[in-house]
Length: 446
Image 1 (cartoon, rainbow, N blue to C red):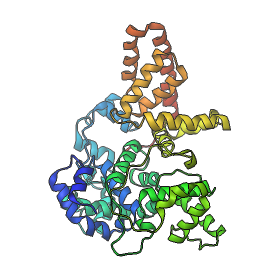
Image 2: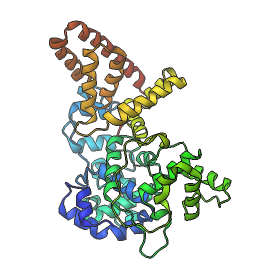
Image 3: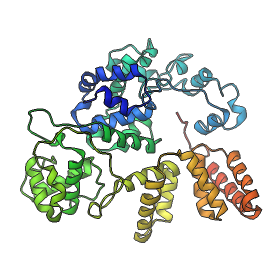
Image 4: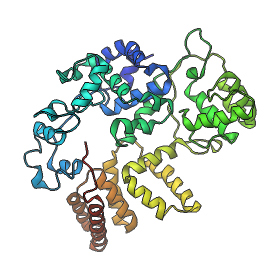
C-alpha cells in the first residue's frame, strides 16, 4: 500500500534514507499499532506527521528564536525585549527556561534534553517515557534515538497509541485529532492540505479475495453514500468522505426506519436501500454497490459540493481557517453580536466558504503574508471594522505591533495621511483591547 514511489510523491523533499526505511517498515509497524485497520486512521496519520515534520524533514525542534518571536510564542514569559536577553538565539537556554520544571522535566538541563524530536515532536521527559515504553525504546536514557530514521515511524505510532488517537479517527474527527496532538488547532490550513494530498496519492484497495466491506469502499463511494443520506434527510454534514459520528448517526436512523439492523455500517444491503431511497440521487450512489473495484489512487477531496450535497467541504475548511486566524474568543463574540440571526448566519456561512474556504486556502502565500495584505487593503480603502479584525489576525500570525505600525506609515506616501491616521487609531484601540483581553489569562505557548 505504502510503496516507495508513493511515499516519494507524498513527501517530496524528504531524504531518501528516511523514505526507504519508512517504506520497509510501514506494513509491519503501522499494522502493529492498528493504523492500517481503517482508511481514516492511515490518512489522518500520514497527514498529521506530514505537517508536524515538514514532510518528514524536521526531526528535532528548532529552539533558535528571535527576540520578537519569543514575545509572540511565550508572551507571559517574555513580555518585553529586555526579558528575552539570554534566551534569544540561545536554543539550550531557551529550552531549559520554557520546558524546565514541567512535563516531567525535573532535573537541570531536562528542558533541552527532552525538547521536541521525531516525526510528531514528542516533548518532555514524561512524553519520552510514555512513548518509549510503547515503542520498546529507552528514550529517557537516550532521547536522540528519536532522531534515527529507523526509529521515527515506530515512535510516531507509539505517540499515536499513547494519545489514543485511533478512536478519534474512527469518529472521522480530523480537528479533534489535531487538538489531541497540538493542544489546539494551529496549522489547520496546512494539515488539511496534507490530508487532501494523502487522499489523492494513497490508495485504499479492497483486500484480495475478500468480500467487500465498508473498509474497502473508496472515498468517492463514501461521499456518494453521504449524499444519499443527505438527499433522504438523514444527514446535514459535509460531503467529505469521512464517515464520522454524524454520518453514522444518520445511517443508523435510516437503517432503523427501513427495517435494517441499525449498525451504522455501510454494508451491501444498506447501500442498495440507500440507492433506492435516494430516488434521483441513485446515479450518484451507483458506484457504492458491492461490485469489485480496481485498486487506484484516491482523488483529492473536492473543494465544493453540489446543491444536493448541502454543506460543502470548502465551508468546513473555511470555518477551521477562520477560527485559526481569529481565535476562539473573537469567533464566539462575533457569533453572539454579529451573526446572531438566520439572515446574518447565512452571510457568515457564505463568507466562510467563499473567502476563508477559497481565498485563504490557496497555495502560494502563507497566512502571515495574507493578513498583512488585508491590513494594507483595509487602510487604503478605509474599511475600519475590517481593519480591526485583520490587525488581530496579523498579530496572531506573528506580526509585531511595530511592524504593523511601520506598514501603515509606509502607506502614507501612497494613499495619503488621513487614512493612515485613522488606521493608526484603529490599530491603537485594537492592540490595547488585545492586551486587556490577554492580561494574565493567556497560558504559555509550547
